[in-house]
Image (cartoon, helix red, strand yellow):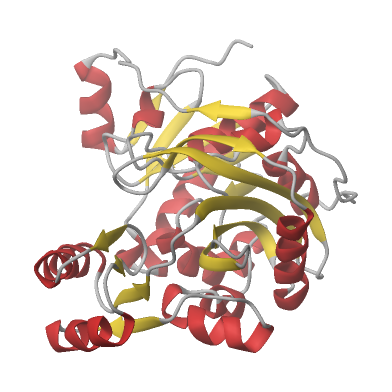
Length: 350
């Protein structure tokens, strides 16, 4: 198989791409060819010869579907793609829109619908919770500083301020909240979301739905170490039926198709609040492999038309600890990718 994969950044706010690739390589071995699809020339995955076989630069989502189709058509002519797995929230709208076109060229995807994508959006999370009976924090859509003041009066401090696509900050004063608003609106656009602060234990759930209401895989993870961006830098699989049932309820209610992540906060009374619903695999998805449920592989098999039975067991107490290291490459590789938008690296030896 030849699979195109986005999300190759591996910094302190990593994309899921490298973890997805590791999961697929572990299952399919050397016959698998990975074509990286990158937006920026400094995404680390581009240069890791044990990760990708070749990488192509693709246009930013803001360029629209026409530019994306032109570039993917060229890449497909060169590589003969069998499938594409997008791994960023911000790119999913475009990939979902062109999915029928990709299918006509023989390129498979396994993605939610636009309606499913919109329903779980941060700006619609409150309505989503009411419709399907999930506990979610109160929130406020913020388009200016007056809205932020009203949100603070209604929700109080600490106040969580979130970007439209990524990043969130817990703010204890109005001055800091205003700074967060300006920073996030400049980076991700409007509206910014002000959300009620829920004190408790942070839990994340990686899941996979088949698009028919069936949950193929659920792995709950408790964060052990959290970065200043709120990202899990270490975590451990836990056993909790209430978390499994929550994920299954989400998949059944939405008929979710593809990978997803539920960000959960369990308060002092044990109530489970859904803080966010991410419409793709999380960056820590390789933990699902260690726990015995290889979610990226199951997604690929379903996309290829295979029947995949739901996983029923996983290993509790499996930990991941993320780490960073210096990868040494040559400036000519960077120049090659920056100038021509393409880079081949050494073939993977497993």
